[in-house]
Image (cartoon, rainbow, N blue to C red):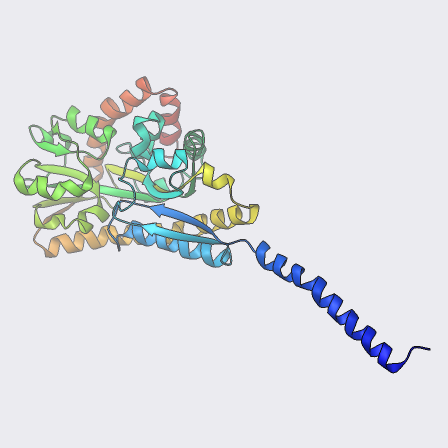
Length: 342
């Protein structure tokens, strides 16, 4: 029969053994709790710009839904990378994500120019059909084949701002110094008789102020965020007829994507898709706000008519669309897929 003293000793010894054996497991559990994946998200626009807000909606949504397993550092105003180099930085894995106009990659991937093709799409209603249509699958593939994945689609429309005279028709561009919004719009403007000066959005204000430019095309967000109402006399607004549009996606490097867990990927796709309507609603509201703001600042506003749009579309067909179909591999098929949604 075991004595009370001996029983107590054995009990204490057993407790001590459990504690000694348990301690490593406690530390192991703590050590195995992986730190959050920290990702850098870059873009070129000022803090507070709608595209900056979009980046923040995405980051906040993913962080909350991923329950802290993913964290973001957002770098606005080209603080981390200049606009165009972001593409190569993502392909190489030096940058995780960017809010990026896909057509900026056209110098390396010519097919992406379709996402900044004048008069394609015509308006937001048509643009928002792209994602799930054949043309959307083509855009996804041209990005993924080049090391980039689109997580969220965000279309932005733009207008024509000018000094001294209104530019409602292509013929009115003749002899003017203009900045297009990408290679395709430049081809259309050149076809219409303008001389082209290329420059990033950040240089437009000074160029208009000093007479380097007479007119330009850009998004309504940029018209506002760069305070172009201070240096313009006229602004053409689209509503149902936009000469200029651009796909501005939240893109992720496929090298970064490959490092994420299945759950993290699912969250990012769900959040990216989930904020698209919010973004497009905000963009359409911003277009109207731009017209109101510019009008209050003394800029004359003109809403493009159906007949005026048809004139621009004809100019685009004979210049930008034609060049894309002839020079880009599979270009005609891509153009046809975009036109099919009209």
